[in-house]
Length: 385
Image (cartoon, rainbow, N blue to C red; front, side, top):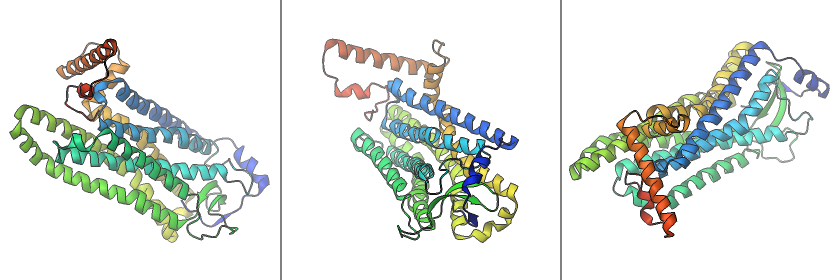
């Protein structure tokens, strides 16, 4: 977020600010962030492990979900540790202590851009995948091949990394010899906090429009079409093959519902942050009443800019557990090994995994090359993996 009305921190004051005891409210905040980091690591590792371990989950849709889980994991590994350190030091940035050194600050800004861009772009790819699965059920397997799917995942990460690199460029002034840095570590006059920031309204506005708001609009439009077509398509498929068609469309609808909830949670967690950042860049006077009240300003930033976005990374595995039966059964089997299946669906899941495992062992022991139909051993007819 852009920072205004700031002054440089005298070198002799830096150590004093960063050695102060953590205030009680920031102790609570730090503990909360640590819990969020641990929950994010545990949940998303569980998602990745489930898809790797259970053959039934190895479909292209779930590989897209793995890509989303990786972006969430990187938030826990690359973003949250620095945020926790800042909180422990009473919301003061205690890296880059020399005036001309902004290396860690620049890394943090770039990686934050990469992770948020990767998350929303993964959701775009997932929404396109669901759109094809619902609207083109008979062409989906031929269109969404593994080559196409993994190419889309590669594009998402290259695109996100591109915006991360571009965050290191000064878009507003464009003068590499300017003494006023666009990435800096300064002290806010309003709160007396030592902060890492980037003052580049052109970059942030362009990045949010192209890499965040536009993909979000694509996701919303795609899902609007998906839900409009879903019920009509269900009837059409069921007429051709009442048993298989109904089962197919019901599975796709369940997957679509799960991803729709993921997208809805993403919007709730990220939109307030996007809106606040854009407004702070172009209408600083709009925030003057909040800046005059130090506690109110800090509360708004902590809730809507610091907490909600990182909570999103820990919520996606919870959503899969609650809304997706296959992930729920996979998580249950990994966490509660040896338990007796409790439902017909659970029994079917176990039998399918045993059948797939036996088939792979048979192929390996006979020495024959893996047949192309190996990808179709999940009992669902999903050739996409």
